[in-house]
Image (cartoon, rainbow, N blue to C red; front, top):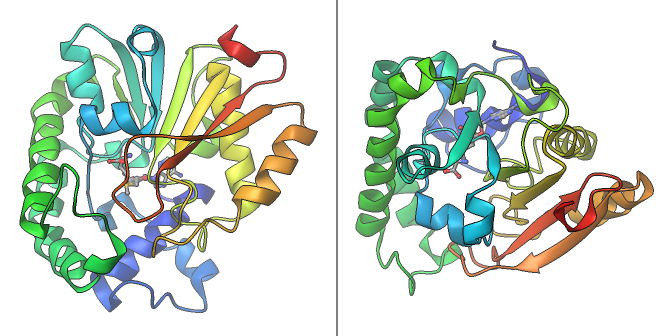
Length: 266
Ligand SMILES: C[S@@+](CC[C@H](N)C(=O)[O-])C[C@H]1O[C@@H](n2cnc3c(N)ncnc32)[C@H](O)[C@@H]1O
């Protein structure tokens, strides 16, 4: 699939690789049509980082989890190895392991170079203390993902689809999580599409958690406040919660949303 509406996040990634970040073209609506997993700049986080970003308890890890926009994160690989039940859903999974690996090789140095130039936007006092360390940690996670990916695809743990129309029945999962897609690309992804994505996650899982609530550039997402009001109006219970993880400065909160009538994870 090459045209899911929420896939406009890739505008940022395409712009990143070709023109340098933050200089998004004015005609980004048209650019959205150019989205293709082939253009992705793969960048993935680890199980431990997911655990912190989403405040996942041991009980949470025993639930049926859907990871939306998981990309080359190793959360699925590592949780599966620990006996968990997890499915990841991302348009990227149209590509095979070799193609994703090639894209990592093609773009890795660009990502690090950009991070070096923008290092003041990040927190370097935690697990990741330098750009070199960042590269090592992200590569390690992506390698775990790659090692697991083809087997996981066969087992149905990696599903190629976008967030706006998840290919799962109502209540197929207990918890849906979405890391570094919604809110991060607020400039490119409209509030309406954020709403649709969160509603979809709540439909298939009853509860969803989204991290971070800051945009690229580490500024608070423009969509958070209007979206909270809209979700509440639609009968969904919401809370913004502080979590342990912070790498983008100020990116230390997640949004938790319950489907109507599902508060407290019932
Ligand atoms: C920055 S990566 C985040 C990867 C992973 N969640 C992590 O935090 O390490 C953003 C991901 O969003 C995915 N994406 C783009 N459009 C999407 C859509 N419409 N639905 C679901 N995922 C999408 C991309 O393929 C990419 O893997």
